[in-house]
Length: 215
Image: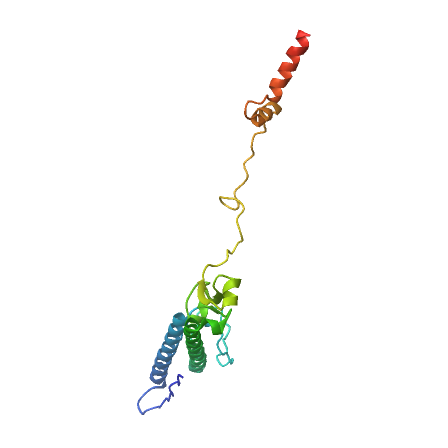
């Protein structure tokens, strides 16, 4: 837990209030930068297993609507520092909970490896172990129904993520325009259907005409 430093402004004899305010602003900006740096480091190290936006916002900062660059007052800087301290505390809590979740998942995986028969059909996604991808550890029977009846169980890792856009029925770009194909005449279609020495439609008509002429 981050405990914000107590800021005390003491007016000493011979020191102007402007000098004290400048030192106070510098100290607050350093504290704010340190809190933001530590918060960002924790979020980046645990991404994507924690939610960076799931931080407590008690409204203390009271984001003042601005229409452009402006200089925050001492009170606003203190509120911003306190708000970042609260967010950092929540991020730390999420990191601790995530580490504990991964530790329990690793323990479960070790038990599944040692005694798979005690964890029949138990599934453990690799994301629970802090790993990326869509793989899942699962205890399955070896050789299907025979292995299930015989008590042969094994731990297997299934990998592979489903396609985001579903199966592609055609090759090439999805939005490629269709090219118009030239239409064939009846004679060309008839000749393409001829196979293995069979007479085509055109040849059959010619033979019929010659036969009638000879008659």
